[in-house]
Image (cartoon, rainbow, N blue to C red; front, side):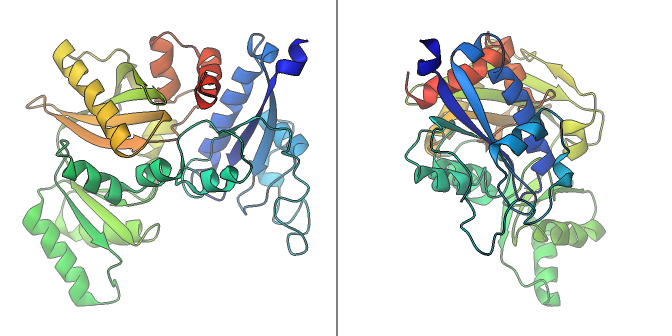
Length: 355
């Protein structure tokens, strides 16, 4: 019988993260894709929602959030079971899950935390492992590795665990930025996603507030030189052999590609991007090389800058759990490459099973 051969997908979403809402939107899209007519013949889905307090909900309540029967903000801390008396996973039935599909963007998910936890279940998962996830999430370590490989990047500075209570330290940081980088600069927390905690700085007086904003998320801070660029993105899927999607370009109306631009605005998406064949080939080669350098496999989205004045390719970053929302680039890139969302999620499961 077909039913006996179905794989149970454990879809994990939400999370104690500043990207909680994005994760829910991504999970709704993936849940619908697995429940399409063609995928229902191969898969069942068991949903696992983690609320903003870090509590895991049972699959029945989790599914109701995905189908809109209950609002995620109605779940309260310790509202499902007494966290002080039992293990945080007790009562969560995940024994019959065959393949995990974590869609936890940001902290405690994309940084490799959830991958480490799921390893103890001895079940395969969609996406890369602990190391690739951690390196992909940490902008400083990622850029350090890229620099050692001499992959092209914008000029940048790194500040780690500096004492912001010391006025001399703050002045030193400001002076170093002024000396080594040209305005505008982008100040970023090393570990964050969806452009949260990032500031574009165009004059000296705005440097310190931007540093403090980034430090509120992560004491390790990255400062990058801003250029006039085009935003180019490329999707990756596969294990030992990585495949690249068509490349796409995002054009946005805001001053830069911030959180609102990514999720709330009507950006202009061009797939395939209007780029010459030589540049496309080089972008795809760098995308594969950068993923292999960080041990990233399964699926990812590699982001690039294309400098407008020189057409120079600059590697920006890799997202190991890119968004799956209706406005997300990753599923759109693969749709343009011949895989619609239903085919894409099935393919990702097959990759995790090495089929």
